[in-house]
Image 1 (cartoon, helix red, strand yellow):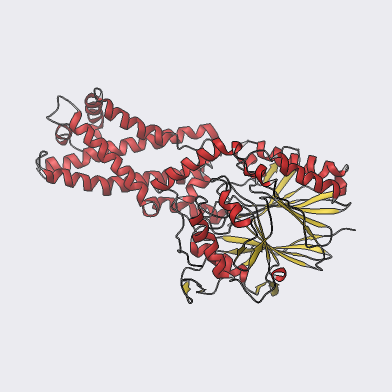
Image 2: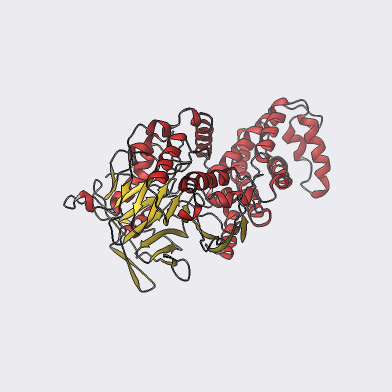
Length: 574
């Protein structure tokens, strides 16, 4: 398959911000009115039976389909005939589960092709000679990014019997149930955009629980977000309530007794790191809550996570492991100081906004301190003692200029409303957000003051000539942009390290490709073994050794290891 190798999504690109914002609003407003899951209910979907296997290898990966290097490194690793972990050989899995957000930033067909299909087709190409029934199976649930087009392209790729490389799809809907060996079930649910689970989906799982579950059955549940983490960070427990409702009222209650079946493992992504919580044992049965969102997108920090979580049903979960470590997570946050380097487009946008504001204040203000605003302030020495006098000039100059006032208000409130009031100190974060907004306004007027003094006073340039206009524009675009970006980076750094806010905004700013992960799971007669595989760094020198239509890539050896000290083992109890 011919495709374009894409770099990591630049989340602070102005074009990208506007595009994602529009799609988020549209999908949020109209999602419930065009719920594709209700349409899917007309597609007959049964149960996928793999229970005859003596043993089964399963891969779980989530939050993939971003930059080529990270996405392909993970796909290539999963496609290898075997990998070695702790002197143990783990063969390629027979079943691949994609746990949500299969593509970034939005689910256009071309993005799926370039960021997901192309890399995975190249990692494990289709083999004509291999019978379809022997090929590895692929199942996927959608995340919020897959839902931005109403699930149209997700359904086209995963619900129409197509293949992704040599992985073949079988599901007809965005949710599924797979019967595994040794009394295990693997269920994938579709929570849409943090909404309620739709009635057709509930009916599907109700019938499954009522007619298919047997005493002693064990469940692996895949969902698109770690509701237990989000509830602990924001206090919004609605998503966690919905998950508990599904487990208690659909999976357990249909069996009349909770002891009949048990959810042993919940797998999710959405947060792009690895973390494992363990629910306190009830009747000698515990549940592992694993977030494994390291399939290719930027790394999320882990130092936000709480050591202990009390869930809405009163159960308590204890944090057992994270990747990256808290120390590594905090250390990486200092990269926000390089915000101008990673996000020069955003800096350019802010500096252009400053140029336009200066243009208006220069051309439309009337003040008693000189012919123009810049001429008036050019004679005021750039010194701390003169700040009060300079502020007086500013207020006097713009009080009768609604255009300048409006531009200042747009800058101030645009920055202020960026404040994260969901995590950390919540609404108290506005105190830092207020300082952040004022800092950008101060930066604008300090730059105007500095460049005016330099150009009109020290260099003695004539304000009416084109040279000082060009020089000022260049100074503002370069130095004004750099200073604006640096202020933004400092704000994100303080937010993430001190206020415990902006986990996504602070980490997406530098788009770290390291600390990727996926799970390789082995199900046997005696136990379920989970191998969390981690990569501190991905390969960056992939070169196409094939053709454009049939690419095959070679690069440095992938360095990976087991994330935890030892595999996670869940033994079957008689």
